[in-house]
Length: 369
Image 1 (spheres, rainbow, N blue to C red):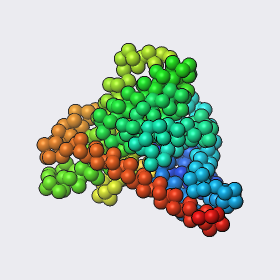
Image 2 (cartoon, rainbow, N blue to C red):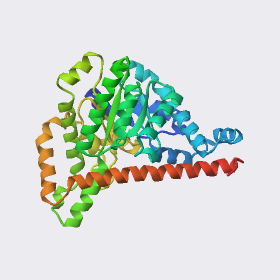
Image 3 (tube, rainbow, N blue to C red):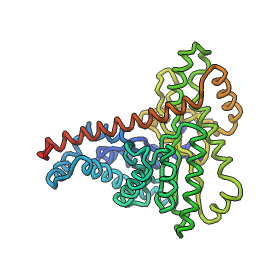
Protein backbone atom coordinates (compact mmCIF):
# COMPACT_ATOMS: atom_id res chain seq x y z
CA UNK A 1 0.00 0.00 0.00
CA UNK A 2 1.31 3.44 -0.92
CA UNK A 3 2.30 5.71 1.95
CA UNK A 4 -0.12 8.54 1.23
CA UNK A 5 1.36 10.84 3.87
CA UNK A 6 4.78 10.39 2.31
CA UNK A 7 3.33 11.06 -1.13
CA UNK A 8 1.84 14.28 0.16
CA UNK A 9 5.17 15.26 1.69
CA UNK A 10 7.02 14.50 -1.53
CA UNK A 11 4.52 16.70 -3.38
CA UNK A 12 5.32 19.69 -1.17
CA UNK A 13 2.60 19.36 1.48
CA UNK A 14 3.98 19.67 5.00
CA UNK A 15 2.10 17.31 7.31
CA UNK A 16 1.59 18.85 10.75
CA UNK A 17 -0.23 17.47 13.78
CA UNK A 18 -3.01 19.64 15.19
CA UNK A 19 -2.51 18.52 18.76
CA UNK A 20 -0.01 18.57 21.61
CA UNK A 21 0.05 17.22 25.14
CA UNK A 22 2.65 16.34 27.72
CA UNK A 23 1.60 12.72 27.32
CA UNK A 24 2.51 12.81 23.61
CA UNK A 25 5.90 14.22 24.52
CA UNK A 26 6.73 11.96 27.44
CA UNK A 27 5.52 8.68 25.93
CA UNK A 28 7.38 9.18 22.65
CA UNK A 29 4.13 9.42 20.68
CA UNK A 30 5.14 12.65 18.97
CA UNK A 31 8.54 11.22 18.08
CA UNK A 32 6.80 8.16 16.62
CA UNK A 33 4.51 10.32 14.47
CA UNK A 34 7.54 12.19 13.15
CA UNK A 35 9.27 8.93 12.34
CA UNK A 36 6.34 6.93 10.94
CA UNK A 37 3.65 9.40 9.87
CA UNK A 38 5.68 12.10 8.08
CA UNK A 39 4.75 14.69 10.73
CA UNK A 40 7.02 17.73 10.49
CA UNK A 41 5.23 20.29 12.67
CA UNK A 42 2.71 20.82 15.46
CA UNK A 43 -0.04 23.35 16.04
CA UNK A 44 -1.79 24.11 19.31
CA UNK A 45 -4.71 26.27 20.34
CA UNK A 46 -6.65 26.94 23.56
CA UNK A 47 -9.02 24.03 22.88
CA UNK A 48 -6.11 21.61 22.51
CA UNK A 49 -4.47 22.74 25.73
CA UNK A 50 -7.79 22.61 27.56
CA UNK A 51 -8.17 18.97 26.52
CA UNK A 52 -4.59 18.11 27.42
CA UNK A 53 -4.68 19.64 30.89
CA UNK A 54 -8.11 18.33 31.82
CA UNK A 55 -7.42 14.73 30.76
CA UNK A 56 -4.01 13.93 32.15
CA UNK A 57 -2.06 13.84 35.40
CA UNK A 58 1.28 14.61 33.84
CA UNK A 59 0.93 18.29 34.69
CA UNK A 60 0.28 17.73 38.38
CA UNK A 61 3.89 17.91 39.57
CA UNK A 62 4.54 21.20 37.81
CA UNK A 63 1.24 22.59 39.09
CA UNK A 64 2.26 21.70 42.66
CA UNK A 65 5.61 23.43 42.19
CA UNK A 66 3.95 26.52 40.77
CA UNK A 67 1.37 26.54 43.59
CA UNK A 68 4.16 26.36 46.16
CA UNK A 69 5.81 29.35 44.48
CA UNK A 70 2.57 31.32 44.74
CA UNK A 71 1.84 31.39 41.00
CA UNK A 72 -1.62 32.61 40.03
CA UNK A 73 -3.83 31.03 37.37
CA UNK A 74 -2.52 33.10 34.46
CA UNK A 75 1.11 32.48 35.40
CA UNK A 76 0.45 28.76 35.76
CA UNK A 77 -1.24 28.41 32.38
CA UNK A 78 1.60 30.36 30.80
CA UNK A 79 4.22 28.12 32.43
CA UNK A 80 2.47 24.85 31.56
CA UNK A 81 1.82 25.68 27.92
CA UNK A 82 5.20 27.25 27.19
CA UNK A 83 6.92 24.25 28.76
CA UNK A 84 5.11 21.87 26.41
CA UNK A 85 5.80 24.02 23.38
CA UNK A 86 9.47 24.45 24.27
CA UNK A 87 9.89 20.69 24.67
CA UNK A 88 8.05 20.01 21.41
CA UNK A 89 10.33 22.51 19.68
CA UNK A 90 13.31 20.56 20.97
CA UNK A 91 11.76 17.32 19.71
CA UNK A 92 11.31 18.82 16.26
CA UNK A 93 14.62 20.71 16.15
CA UNK A 94 16.24 18.15 13.79
CA UNK A 95 13.40 18.64 11.31
CA UNK A 96 13.81 22.41 11.56
CA UNK A 97 17.52 22.08 10.84
CA UNK A 98 17.03 19.63 7.96
CA UNK A 99 14.46 21.88 6.27
CA UNK A 100 16.40 25.11 6.85
CA UNK A 101 13.68 26.48 9.09
CA UNK A 102 10.69 25.72 6.88
CA UNK A 103 9.28 22.94 9.05
CA UNK A 104 9.96 21.52 12.50
CA UNK A 105 7.70 24.25 13.84
CA UNK A 106 5.49 24.35 16.94
CA UNK A 107 2.80 27.02 17.32
CA UNK A 108 1.51 28.65 20.50
CA UNK A 109 -1.29 31.19 20.54
CA UNK A 110 -1.63 34.53 22.26
CA UNK A 111 -4.62 34.71 24.59
CA UNK A 112 -7.84 34.79 22.55
CA UNK A 113 -9.04 37.54 24.89
CA UNK A 114 -6.63 39.78 22.97
CA UNK A 115 -8.10 39.10 19.51
CA UNK A 116 -9.30 42.72 19.22
CA UNK A 117 -6.42 44.32 21.14
CA UNK A 118 -3.45 45.21 18.94
CA UNK A 119 -1.05 46.31 21.66
CA UNK A 120 -2.04 43.49 23.99
CA UNK A 121 -1.51 40.95 21.21
CA UNK A 122 1.91 42.35 20.41
CA UNK A 123 2.99 42.35 24.05
CA UNK A 124 1.83 38.75 24.44
CA UNK A 125 3.61 37.69 21.24
CA UNK A 126 6.85 39.22 22.45
CA UNK A 127 6.56 37.50 25.84
CA UNK A 128 5.75 34.09 24.37
CA UNK A 129 8.60 34.35 21.87
CA UNK A 130 11.06 35.30 24.60
CA UNK A 131 9.96 32.65 27.10
CA UNK A 132 9.65 29.72 24.68
CA UNK A 133 13.04 30.90 23.40
CA UNK A 134 13.27 28.54 20.44
CA UNK A 135 13.89 29.61 16.84
CA UNK A 136 11.43 26.99 15.56
CA UNK A 137 8.47 28.34 17.52
CA UNK A 138 5.56 30.09 15.84
CA UNK A 139 3.46 32.64 17.70
CA UNK A 140 -0.18 32.44 16.64
CA UNK A 141 -1.90 35.77 16.14
CA UNK A 142 -5.55 35.99 15.03
CA UNK A 143 -6.14 37.39 11.56
CA UNK A 144 -8.57 40.01 12.84
CA UNK A 145 -8.27 43.66 11.73
CA UNK A 146 -6.72 44.44 15.12
CA UNK A 147 -4.30 41.55 14.61
CA UNK A 148 -2.94 42.81 11.28
CA UNK A 149 -0.72 45.60 12.66
CA UNK A 150 0.46 43.29 15.45
CA UNK A 151 1.47 40.73 12.81
CA UNK A 152 3.46 43.35 10.92
CA UNK A 153 5.24 44.64 14.01
CA UNK A 154 6.02 41.16 15.39
CA UNK A 155 7.51 40.04 12.08
CA UNK A 156 9.43 43.30 11.89
CA UNK A 157 11.08 42.33 15.17
CA UNK A 158 12.02 38.90 13.83
CA UNK A 159 9.22 36.96 15.56
CA UNK A 160 7.92 34.08 13.45
CA UNK A 161 4.14 34.18 13.17
CA UNK A 162 1.34 31.74 12.44
CA UNK A 163 -1.68 33.85 11.53
CA UNK A 164 -4.79 32.00 12.66
CA UNK A 165 -8.57 32.20 12.21
CA UNK A 166 -8.53 33.14 8.53
CA UNK A 167 -11.79 32.35 6.77
CA UNK A 168 -12.32 34.85 3.95
CA UNK A 169 -10.46 35.84 0.80
CA UNK A 170 -10.40 39.60 1.52
CA UNK A 171 -9.29 38.85 5.07
CA UNK A 172 -6.52 36.64 3.69
CA UNK A 173 -5.27 39.39 1.37
CA UNK A 174 -4.97 41.71 4.38
CA UNK A 175 -2.96 39.02 6.18
CA UNK A 176 -0.55 38.63 3.25
CA UNK A 177 -0.18 42.40 3.10
CA UNK A 178 0.60 42.46 6.83
CA UNK A 179 3.24 39.79 6.25
CA UNK A 180 5.01 41.63 3.45
CA UNK A 181 4.87 44.88 5.41
CA UNK A 182 6.43 43.01 8.32
CA UNK A 183 9.25 41.74 6.13
CA UNK A 184 9.91 45.25 4.87
CA UNK A 185 10.01 46.48 8.46
CA UNK A 186 12.37 43.65 9.42
CA UNK A 187 14.63 44.52 6.51
CA UNK A 188 14.71 48.15 7.65
CA UNK A 189 15.62 46.93 11.16
CA UNK A 190 18.53 44.91 9.80
CA UNK A 191 16.91 41.52 10.49
CA UNK A 192 18.07 38.61 8.33
CA UNK A 193 14.95 37.93 6.27
CA UNK A 194 15.84 34.28 5.81
CA UNK A 195 15.12 33.77 9.52
CA UNK A 196 11.62 35.28 9.40
CA UNK A 197 9.01 32.64 8.62
CA UNK A 198 5.23 32.65 8.65
CA UNK A 199 2.19 30.58 7.74
CA UNK A 200 -1.38 31.73 7.19
CA UNK A 201 -3.92 29.36 8.72
CA UNK A 202 -6.97 29.22 6.47
CA UNK A 203 -9.85 27.35 8.10
CA UNK A 204 -11.75 24.89 5.93
CA UNK A 205 -14.37 22.61 7.49
CA UNK A 206 -16.12 25.33 9.46
CA UNK A 207 -16.96 27.06 6.17
CA UNK A 208 -18.87 23.99 5.04
CA UNK A 209 -20.70 23.73 8.36
CA UNK A 210 -21.97 27.30 8.14
CA UNK A 211 -22.79 27.20 4.43
CA UNK A 212 -24.49 23.80 4.64
CA UNK A 213 -26.72 25.03 7.45
CA UNK A 214 -27.73 28.03 5.38
CA UNK A 215 -28.38 25.88 2.31
CA UNK A 216 -30.62 23.62 4.35
CA UNK A 217 -32.50 26.60 5.78
CA UNK A 218 -33.04 27.96 2.27
CA UNK A 219 -34.18 24.62 0.86
CA UNK A 220 -31.45 24.92 -1.77
CA UNK A 221 -30.08 22.24 -4.08
CA UNK A 222 -28.38 19.70 -1.76
CA UNK A 223 -25.68 19.07 -4.37
CA UNK A 224 -24.22 22.44 -3.37
CA UNK A 225 -23.41 21.16 0.11
CA UNK A 226 -19.98 20.10 1.30
CA UNK A 227 -18.04 21.96 -1.36
CA UNK A 228 -17.70 25.54 -0.13
CA UNK A 229 -14.73 24.95 2.19
CA UNK A 230 -12.55 23.40 -0.49
CA UNK A 231 -13.62 25.93 -3.13
CA UNK A 232 -12.82 28.79 -0.77
CA UNK A 233 -9.39 27.34 0.06
CA UNK A 234 -8.55 26.75 -3.59
CA UNK A 235 -9.28 30.40 -4.34
CA UNK A 236 -7.12 31.36 -1.37
CA UNK A 237 -4.23 29.49 -2.96
CA UNK A 238 -4.86 31.32 -6.22
CA UNK A 239 -4.69 34.59 -4.27
CA UNK A 240 -1.43 33.40 -2.69
CA UNK A 241 0.11 32.74 -6.11
CA UNK A 242 -1.01 36.13 -7.38
CA UNK A 243 0.18 38.02 -4.31
CA UNK A 244 3.66 36.58 -4.04
CA UNK A 245 4.74 37.84 -7.46
CA UNK A 246 5.86 41.12 -8.94
CA UNK A 247 8.61 43.60 -8.14
CA UNK A 248 7.72 44.26 -4.51
CA UNK A 249 7.91 40.59 -3.59
CA UNK A 250 10.89 39.87 -5.81
CA UNK A 251 12.90 42.54 -4.00
CA UNK A 252 12.20 40.86 -0.68
CA UNK A 253 12.88 37.38 -2.07
CA UNK A 254 16.22 38.59 -3.38
CA UNK A 255 17.04 39.63 0.19
CA UNK A 256 16.32 36.12 1.45
CA UNK A 257 12.60 36.30 2.26
CA UNK A 258 10.34 33.30 1.91
CA UNK A 259 6.69 33.44 0.91
CA UNK A 260 4.16 32.99 3.70
CA UNK A 261 2.79 29.50 3.11
CA UNK A 262 -0.94 28.79 3.23
CA UNK A 263 -1.83 26.36 6.02
CA UNK A 264 -5.06 24.38 5.77
CA UNK A 265 -6.57 24.29 9.26
CA UNK A 266 -9.79 22.76 10.60
CA UNK A 267 -9.26 19.75 8.32
CA UNK A 268 -11.24 17.22 10.31
CA UNK A 269 -14.68 16.76 8.78
CA UNK A 270 -17.58 17.98 10.89
CA UNK A 271 -20.21 16.06 8.89
CA UNK A 272 -19.73 12.28 9.27
CA UNK A 273 -21.35 11.76 5.85
CA UNK A 274 -18.34 13.36 4.17
CA UNK A 275 -15.11 11.63 3.20
CA UNK A 276 -12.90 12.01 6.26
CA UNK A 277 -9.83 12.67 4.09
CA UNK A 278 -11.41 15.28 1.78
CA UNK A 279 -9.83 18.37 3.36
CA UNK A 280 -6.41 16.82 2.89
CA UNK A 281 -6.39 15.03 -0.46
CA UNK A 282 -8.61 17.62 -2.18
CA UNK A 283 -6.29 20.44 -1.11
CA UNK A 284 -3.01 18.77 -2.02
CA UNK A 285 -0.69 21.30 -3.62
CA UNK A 286 2.93 22.28 -3.13
CA UNK A 287 4.11 25.01 -0.75
CA UNK A 288 1.31 24.34 1.73
CA UNK A 289 0.88 22.98 5.24
CA UNK A 290 -1.98 20.71 6.25
CA UNK A 291 -2.39 20.49 10.02
CA UNK A 292 -4.53 17.51 10.98
CA UNK A 293 -6.09 16.12 14.12
CA UNK A 294 -4.66 12.65 14.74
CA UNK A 295 -7.94 11.03 13.68
CA UNK A 296 -7.68 12.70 10.27
CA UNK A 297 -3.98 11.89 10.01
CA UNK A 298 -4.70 8.21 10.58
CA UNK A 299 -7.63 8.26 8.14
CA UNK A 300 -5.38 9.65 5.41
CA UNK A 301 -2.73 7.05 6.19
CA UNK A 302 -5.33 4.27 6.12
CA UNK A 303 -7.48 5.05 3.08
CA UNK A 304 -6.55 8.44 1.62
CA UNK A 305 -5.90 8.54 -2.11
CA UNK A 306 -3.25 10.93 -3.41
CA UNK A 307 -4.12 12.26 -6.85
CA UNK A 308 -1.52 14.96 -7.28
CA UNK A 309 -2.24 18.69 -7.41
CA UNK A 310 -5.92 19.13 -6.63
CA UNK A 311 -5.87 22.91 -6.37
CA UNK A 312 -4.45 24.69 -9.44
CA UNK A 313 -6.56 22.77 -12.00
CA UNK A 314 -9.76 23.75 -10.17
CA UNK A 315 -9.65 27.54 -9.86
CA UNK A 316 -12.46 28.06 -12.37
CA UNK A 317 -14.64 25.39 -10.75
CA UNK A 318 -14.05 26.94 -7.32
CA UNK A 319 -15.10 30.40 -8.52
CA UNK A 320 -18.16 28.93 -10.23
CA UNK A 321 -19.18 27.19 -7.01
CA UNK A 322 -19.05 30.40 -5.00
CA UNK A 323 -21.15 32.04 -7.72
CA UNK A 324 -23.67 29.20 -7.46
CA UNK A 325 -23.85 29.69 -3.71
CA UNK A 326 -24.50 33.40 -4.20
CA UNK A 327 -27.27 32.56 -6.66
CA UNK A 328 -28.76 30.28 -3.99
CA UNK A 329 -28.90 33.21 -1.59
CA UNK A 330 -25.75 32.54 0.42
CA UNK A 331 -24.15 35.83 1.49
CA UNK A 332 -20.41 35.05 1.43
CA UNK A 333 -19.36 38.15 3.35
CA UNK A 334 -21.86 37.44 6.11
CA UNK A 335 -20.72 33.80 6.31
CA UNK A 336 -17.13 34.96 6.81
CA UNK A 337 -18.08 37.61 9.39
CA UNK A 338 -20.02 35.02 11.41
CA UNK A 339 -17.18 32.49 11.23
CA UNK A 340 -14.56 34.99 12.39
CA UNK A 341 -16.74 36.07 15.30
CA UNK A 342 -17.60 32.50 16.26
CA UNK A 343 -13.99 31.38 15.85
CA UNK A 344 -12.78 33.98 18.31
CA UNK A 345 -15.66 33.22 20.69
CA UNK A 346 -14.95 29.47 20.66
CA UNK A 347 -11.28 29.97 21.48
CA UNK A 348 -12.17 32.47 24.21
CA UNK A 349 -14.56 29.92 25.73
CA UNK A 350 -11.90 27.20 25.61
CA UNK A 351 -9.37 29.57 27.12
CA UNK A 352 -11.61 30.30 30.07
CA UNK A 353 -12.34 26.60 30.52
CA UNK A 354 -8.58 26.09 30.61
CA UNK A 355 -8.23 28.80 33.25
CA UNK A 356 -10.98 27.14 35.31
CA UNK A 357 -9.28 23.74 35.01
CA UNK A 358 -5.96 25.15 36.17
CA UNK A 359 -7.61 27.16 38.94
CA UNK A 360 -9.10 23.93 40.31
CA UNK A 361 -5.73 22.19 40.04
CA UNK A 362 -4.02 25.00 41.94
CA UNK A 363 -6.65 24.88 44.68
CA UNK A 364 -6.28 21.12 45.05
CA UNK A 365 -2.52 21.63 45.28
CA UNK A 366 -3.05 23.96 48.22
CA UNK A 367 -2.76 27.33 46.51
CA UNK A 368 -5.04 30.12 47.72
CA UNK A 369 -8.19 30.45 45.61
